[in-house]
Length: 359
Ligand code: PLP
Image 1 (cartoon, protein in one colour):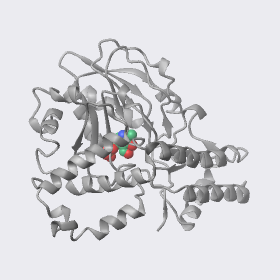
Image 2 (cartoon, protein in one colour):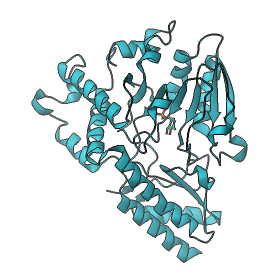
Image 3 (cartoon, rainbow, N blue to C red):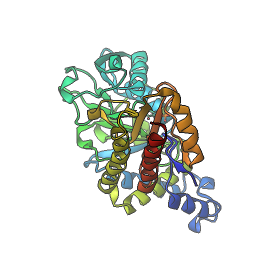
């Protein structure tokens, strides 16, 4: 198998893939695949309960938080958050730290009134704000932040003071990759395809109290309250994606949980940032040092003409998924939980060697 640095869908743990393969045709005592089981069967109900319990526990969610399993990816949440949480006549505040944050804001502005509480767009998304830079927006229905900016390679360190507004977080590319103080958030959401499993399901983790009566006038299928009341089984859910998430969560527990993975991920990222910083200017980090993401390391080669050669040689050497996002260019290595320290070490050595040959 290749060393997979894809940004998402991302690498999955080999153990999980093997386990899924072994139970694909016949799952335990079911006598059929879990994909063939009714979503009204006790096995599937128990799978959803178990996956919720594990996710709440791994994410260290305080009491009173619930998980909703939804479809439509994190992008659907860009719209569903304001549809459910932004009352008519109210406004929501957005901190813009990258293109996904901007998309979330644009969707909110289609739903109702959205204000920009911070933007680093003029710096080319090179920086994440220090929390004090976010304009206080008293009276906002919520403040939305994108905790890790997958495309730009930056992350928040510390969280803004919201002036009383509930905090909502897009945690798609950092949930379970590093610890997060969920008690500061009223609601977070994450597409599964980074640290949680394959694509196909989105986890919303939120205070039950904020979900229970959200979105009063909405069609039922778009209401958080509908998913809450029905334990995410209102209609046919993506059962297999949730099954895969459960396997990934079990694997995450076996690694020692999020605290252990955070330590490992910080060391993985350091290997690559060191390769950039010690290259004598051959490589350039894409964002300010203080804003550097632990999950998505992005860099350029000072001599841009060498970038295609780098990518081609990397591929020849078994490194997959290193091309930067088309809007950014350069290189990006995504270091989610399933990417091994050994792969990161091998990539750092490859970077050093490439710089030595071409510098
Ligand atoms: N938000 C962030 C931070 C992401 O990284 C992504 C996808 O990579 C999205 C939102 C969009 O997710 P989806 O493709 O599941 O809609």
